[in-house]
Image 1 (tube, rainbow over the protein chains, first blue to last red):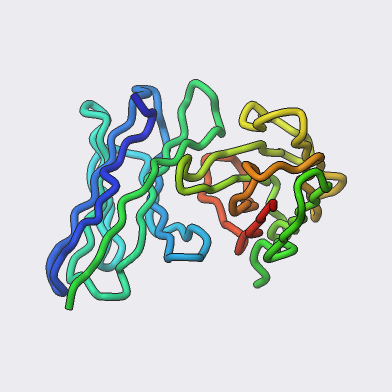
Image 2: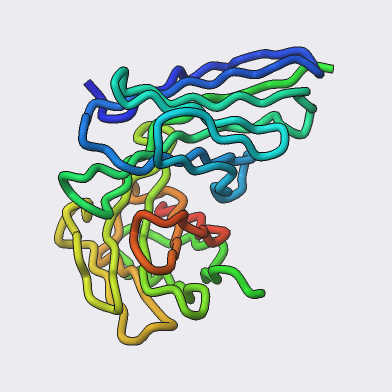
Length: 112
Length: 114
């Protein structure tokens, strides 16, 4: 079992709809959770981070964390073609502080 | 503000040659990370430094890989001798305060070993 699991996709969503990206992690002691966006041929770019259970909203993006279920998700409202990218979930385990583990990413495609 | 700066952007070399990748973190950041990204293995943390000191190098694949950070504004990742399986995109990232803080990535070095 991978430490951080994501569906590789591609996830195809119509423009204007809500895109929902999911991530599960195996280390119950994990403390910090990040979502990075990576366009093809580019470097990862941080879009959201969340430390506490519940929801965190930033513009069209909402991160949701459920530590009991070891689940973190990213919702993108009013999806735009420019949101088409690979989204990487990343987790920092408390057991080895500072070591960030990335999921393999979910490829999102927004169709016009 | 200048971001994380990596050089070179592209490197093509023959197997057996020494390869040196360079990174300048964001000024004031005290954590520096080296990653490797391939289609097969995704984004892997190789090593990270705090205040120029290597903290965790458990991700370094083998002794052919070495990394140094002689001062707060410069780090190198060296591969000697290089092999075709080292072909990947290598990213450097930095963060401030604690490693729990978000990381800022450089543009990466695309390395091809023939």
